[in-house]
Length: 276
Image (tube, rainbow, N blue to C red; front, side):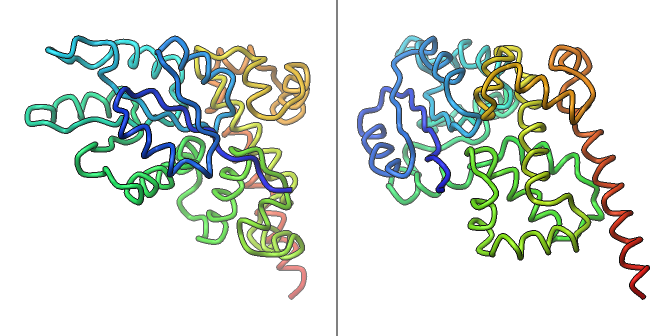
């Protein structure tokens, strides 16, 4: 089964730019929204893999454009969101670009320089999967091999778009049996367990978003209900969403994940030494 297309939420007043995004966004589920309020509602209803393309000046006076306070509020409520700001980079706006980075915007696209279909498509593909992968890059031990890191990052990308075990093998251009063998050699949990862990870590990262309810996190990560999410977190982490939120959900979950990873790698080394 192929993973569902990635949602693309667009809020921008430039008609030519919107049409360009519409054309390059055929591989996405493209939704055009008229306001910050509607965009917030779409974020809650969309899976975590959604990409947002916004005009950061939307709602301000045309004669004196200012970065929208609504965007800052949105980024505070949903820090895990992948947001691309599309702006006309005029002289004197370098401070605004720095501010967008400080607020948590993932990338800035220039309406003048990146105005071709190919350029916009490249920028969209470049920011795919950054949210969970970015957190993992800061979390994973530096001594992991390139293959081990690739398996973990690909699993994170597959989970972000609602994929399953077959999608992991397809993304790696390998058979499911080969992926299982690679995971064992890398000292990783089996692929099914790895994907379950990525769902837990993804849900934990979303729980750190103040604007998301436990139910919306559950639905975003593919759990049938908030009860299903609570049971999974109890099984993997020994704590429920509310307790994890108070402690810092992703940091707590990643510690437990790294402990299991260390145990799995140690057991793999022991098995390898017994063979020789």
